[in-house]
Each structure stands twice: as C-alpha cells, then as structure tokens.
Length: 229
Image: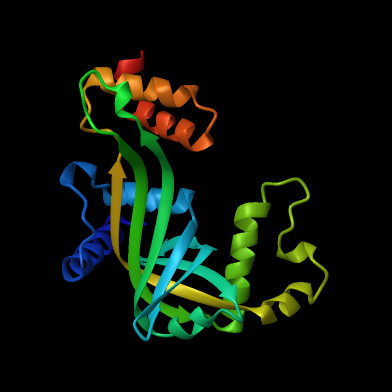
C-alpha cells in the first residue's frame, strides 16, 4: 500500500473515531493504528456485534482482514439460520472485537502494597456491513482456505474438494463484508510498573502452565528487552 493510501486509511479512522462513542482507554494503554491492525490479523477470531430492535446480537466468527485502495475490510460468514444476518445488510453500526492474550496479575508480585489487576490486549473495529453476493462469497472462502491451508501438507484449498462440494455447503451460510471506518486498540500490559515489578510479573507468568499467561509474559518481555539481557 502506498504512503498516500495509508494516510487516507489513517485519516478515515481518525474522523470516524471522533464521531463515535469512545471506549475508555487511558493514553498510556492506547495502541497505535499499526499495532491494532497487526493484532486484528494475528488474532482473527472476532466477536461480531450488531443490534436488532435495541437488542444486541453477537457471533464469534473468524474474519479475514485486507487493505486495498486506501480502505480496510473484514470478510467472514455466519450460518444461514443465524438471525444476525438480517442486521448485516447496509448496516453502518457494526462492531468487531478482537481479543489478544490476557492474564490476572497478582499484586503479591509487587515490591509495595498494591491491588491486583488484569493485563490484556483488545481491539474494537467499527464499520459498515453488507452481504456478499454468491461469487464474492466464493472468492472470500477461497482466500480463507488459502490462508489457513495452503502452507499445510495436503492442505484443503478450494480446488482440492470434489466439484460442487463447497458450492453446496455455501447454501448453508451467509457471507458479509465490513468496511472498517474506526479502530481503537488497548494494550493494558503493566506499562505503569517499575522495572523491578515488571521483571517479577514476567518471571511469575513464565512459571505458569497456562498458555495465555505465557503469551502475556512473552509480550511483556518483548516490550522491555533491555531488562532481560
């Protein structure tokens, strides 16, 4: 993507963000635009939220993020029987929530007396949704299969299936595309802790058998590499 295209995307995100309700995120915990987009791509299993007659509807769904011609899109699909499909056609108020690693942080790991907290990574992406036509859905599904299967031995990309198999399966789903117009990312990851507490947090999390806690420790270690040389 060109520099001009990136600037266009960033400006569109900023303008939309100024108009929408802000998620409370203290300045020190705010992700940059690039960090938020990267997390959306590496943690693509999102929570899709829309509203039907003042009632929120939500579906946990994987999405594909792409950037083209200065815009950003998320594509995915839900079951045909999912009532949320009725809220996805020309809807300007759609929210995708992406959740990264998170972990409970015990205050027993600090030098001084403090209260415990929770470290986490999260991104809220706002946008306008539309339903995909059949040929668009086929292209979106083929792209998703390529993403997750092409690198595997005997990966099941589109052309490896029996002719007509996937077209028949498509009858049971509805595809959607969301043009993303606003992004807010939060990385509340012990930035406010001094070096001694920070090293203690990482050490305790690395002792854990919990994968989420190990991932948080890995992220924290990467942010202050100089502490762990």
